[in-house]
Image: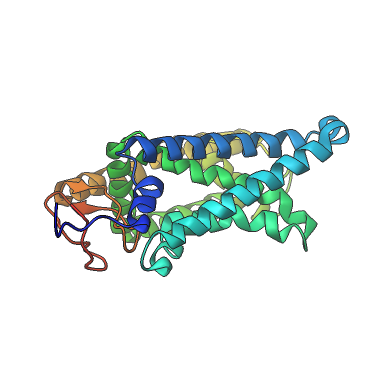
Length: 275
């Protein structure tokens, strides 16, 4: 049709790399996930000494193949949007960079090679690929709930810290430097392990009074566990009520998601969403 604007190569590349609502986009992302899974498996197998001795060279070759592919993919992500800096400093952009950095740093710092398991973080893209948007909503709710409850949880943790200091000091006096309670810091360590119901058992009371105090600490521990859960659950419910339904379509300019259903322009950079 005369005068109709045809999308350019950058727009088509953006649809393939960033969007998953087309066949090409979903195929690209599924292929990317398979490559990420395979590279992680290679890194784990290479950490097995017997396999490293026998197949170390093959693992290294495959690892560099994946590194080059992921580097090309990262560059294409920058090229396909108008403001690459927006993607670089976005959560997915930071994850992608962290996934690439260890391979190149390993050239100068051999120990950095073990950090290649950071690529597992890139599997977070599976939420977007298979349209499991409700999981992304729940993650956002949890983030907001945690931010809203930081003050209450901080006060709670301070109270628990004071309680463990008191209980540890009491056990230090009750056990009289015996049975592992040789000093107050060791006794506080026991109180923390007990009140959190971890119970390593490396330090335990022997005297009747010490066992009685330990029983009280255990019961307090069970009661304490429910407090932060209730705080976060309450704030989680509040965040859910305030949250509006959003459309997780990626902006072709900055690459960010989370726009309103009826949005025609990006709420972060103002660019058209090409609807």
